[in-house]
Image (cartoon, rainbow, N blue to C red; front, side, top):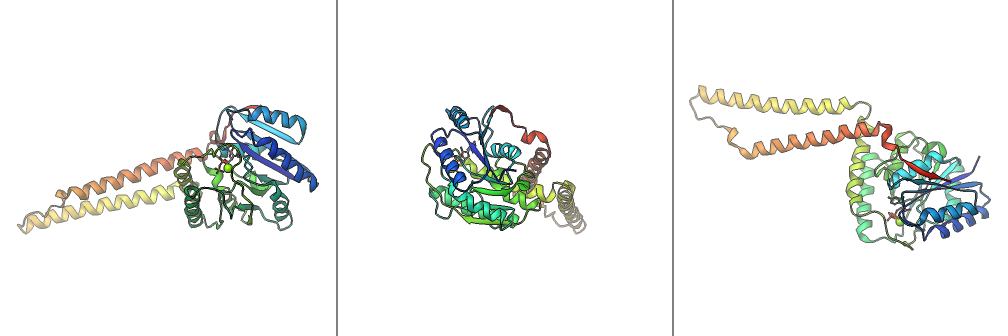
Length: 316
Ligand code: UDP
Ligand code: MG
């Protein structure tokens, strides 16, 4: 059995690949690890695939899969995880921001200290404030919603036991919540290691500002689906009953009010004139309906195999 599988998702990273491969090979050879590197080309529009082909021709341990189009980082990791065979699986970004020098220690933490998962922590970051501040808020939200207390959930450099990654389903922005899923699946020995972080050497970041909105929505999904995925009725049923009771209570109040004013010959106090009250009521009802509609869609998505049905064009 191989000691290590390194899974590298990439989208338009042609300049970084030769350097990254050479670096990985050097570290693996120095430590005498048996290994494979699985590159997942996520529909790159540059020459990344040609570069990978020539690198794979030079080193038989390099494997590569190429998607028919850009599916996103989660999809790339998902397919890499399916292919991985090493007893320890390492994920890292292709852009040289993550250092292969960290691999031996990550490997030791999994095999000797028996962690299920070790997540990198980019303590000294080389990212703009526009990214580091939302990241802080994110980690706080993840901690609050899932109980997982990592400084840096989003670090691309992570290590896993093989059996852990085989239980994980990735789509959308779910790559940000792998520790959350692992923990939910019962792999709760989660560690953290401070790792070096380089500024991006070539190219630019592939994620825009929308990452925060999508990421937040996916965090809500994963939390709710984990809690209610198997018993949606517990959620829909209680909310439905609650909403029904509120409506019933207001109706009864209006009827009682009407009877009271008629029998006492005083003008009907008539809260029906309170337009704002009704607008607020309607907004709340519509809002919750929309949220629930999204949630039902999410349930269907998460439980369908189509979610992770990614088309592969070529494989080495
Ligand atoms: N990536 C990918 N598919 C995408 C976007 C990004 O495979 O649609 C890869 C990218 O090539 C890199 C990693 O995911 O290897 C992290 O992306 P990036 O460096 O742009 O993210 P950041 O470091 O800015 O969070
Ligand atoms: Mg990067």
